[in-house]
Length: 292
Image (tube, rainbow, N blue to C red; front, side, top):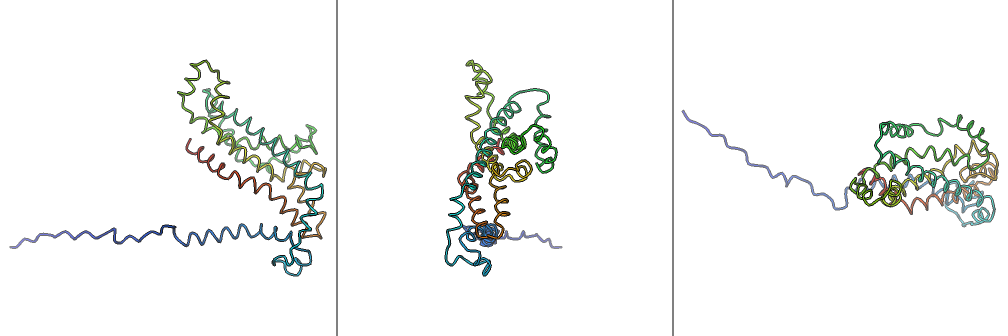
């Protein structure tokens, strides 16, 4: 009777089977990214180039390039007072909204994050629930409230609701920042005789600057691009904001397509520049909120 011993199979070279990774990533990912970027930028490019064309060129070749280039449409818009008045109205509304959102949101977030009271979790949940109610849902009762307050055809009639609807997002972003502040810093400040208000101004505000910048940028852009609320509240052309002014200009010059495209292009430039300059601030602030 013979005995057999089982021989273990030789280990396979696993590392040799791994495919070498490309230092720049997979080409298909870049190809897909390029396609997505083209699809996103194509409408913007069409509007901008359309402003340099004439109505005859648009009618003859809707998707062609300007031949020759015509800057008259942009000059007419920039020379007129309508565009600059609407830019001023949008700047006032967006600036006041941003200041109100940052001020109230930072104070409310400080109370929720640093104070210990029984209804703190419920209060935070109420603000979080505000994210589920867009302004379009409450536009009818909001219109009645603004009308009863006598704020129709007034920039204050759009500033106050914009602050209220931007507060939930602001508080959701700022509370993690303020909770991440070590308790030892607060205790050391109290030992040195600093009050809660003094701790807020001297320590909380400087440490929360990334979150404040992020929420301020988001509030400014949302106010600048707001359309539904101004459409219901502002009926006087002198008080129109820029998005509402684009719609009014398009209706007034419906036969002059090239000038409408030029006006639309100029109305997009401020928001695009503002967002491009502060894009890293937005990402950095949101990253800090997630970490906190």
